[in-house]
Length: 198
Ligand SMILES: Cc1cc2nc3c(=O)[nH]c(=O)nc-3n(C[C@H](O)[C@H](O)[C@H](O)COP(=O)(O)O)c2cc1C
Image (tube, rainbow, N blue to C red):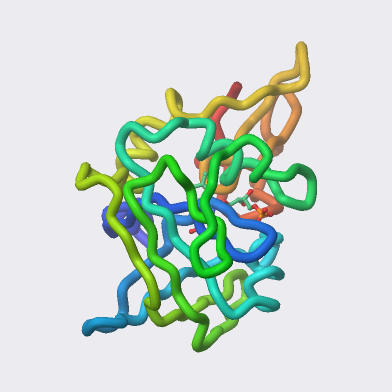
């Protein structure tokens, strides 16, 4: 492969994906049909707790994040697992169709799950849009913008005195002065070029 970085030019947004009892940050969202109730897909890593929850639940919601989103929303939902913390304790939400959506977002889409397709690392969840609202007609944050500005957006609390390397894709933290040669993120599988020193 000559340069895989071209895949970063695929335009994607920034969302909080929620379902009953959990949720996480996602960018891998697509609208895959048209009409009043279009189909929307979201790709979720099998290692995410949210994946487990989505397999058990029949609905999910996507809250759309704005350019001036509170970075705490990204760190809480994208750099932590519901296995370890209750993400809903610090971030304000409102229930729609039984699913928590993020108050501080541009709006939301609630989908009824109609299909799941597994590959080796991710599950593609496909849902039919059943409810949606637009709170504010402002510019949504793109994944490209996040990648360009992640230094300012990511606030990671590291163990005192230790050098940490943070995976900018999934938030996995490796403690150590240098990343080992040929290091691969154990959570999402990207190479060491995607890690940032903190
Ligand atoms: C900017 C950003 C984009 C992300 N995009 C995705 C994504 O598209 N799909 C996915 O499964 N995880 C994605 N993640 C990773 C999850 O949000 C992260 O692993 C989260 O901690 C999982 O939490 P959970 O274990 O509670 O499900 C992304 C994280 C960040 C910071």
